[in-house]
Image (cartoon, rainbow, N blue to C red):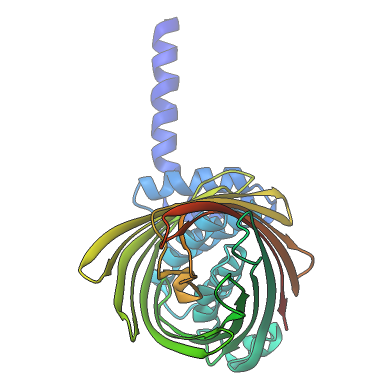
Length: 384
């Protein structure tokens, strides 16, 4: 008799569970959890409902908000994107995708969804379609070496970001590099960089850039100029926590042509410290010779507003293009190894300050002698 009662209770529970997993009950239960801020219970119930082929817009939105409240923005994005499959024009989903994009550092995705909001909502959130001065950044770099034949170089850069629309962005930068050697009174390099980015889709971004390099070498008897041009192309695709980019560039000057082709793969790992890894590999072709450059970065949030990143780059960096074309390595002495550490401090929503230490192993190509170079960078980004 006891065994029969147990079997009856188990059977009754199973029948009851099957009866309660329907649209009406799931809608009622998840709404109750939503109102009571029971995010874990809401997410668990939502997953069980979807497993049983019960899926609807409000379920996805509630699950999206639950993840958002737990600061799990990648899963929030996934849920709100699913809700758009039921209603592609739903403003609430686009609004939280906008916020989730900002919270994952993907401003281009955020701007894409901002463009889907109504004019009234954009005005309420103070989102403008055109921002001629969206952000300004400035950095200064001082290098120190142990070679008596080379001075300690300086590098100065100023950047300006312009939002041309909700899906179109223009970043521009000017910079100057200075150094003196035993054979020169000055080596100066003035540069201009421009990158136009277009969000084709929410997570698909295409960038086209141009980098002008004007190298001037002064001696006691002469002044020589070696201008060069770099054309840049990059396509970037995000898959939740995974990001994949294909990059290509062509550098030309009077000495020849250097092409660089490669890929970059980044992954944002789960966890309170928000760790991430980014790996890049490039093939550089120069005067019919190929070489490989590999770069690895790893970062995390040390504190809520302090982000740390370490990096290492292996390979000969002669005429190497980095960070979507912003940095170009064509100094007199080639870098054959580089490692560094950076700190980024978000003072407030408008100001970010950062610092960097980098160690470089340099090669004097004429003598094949190596020397060490250390560099310190300080910078600031002002979001207007």
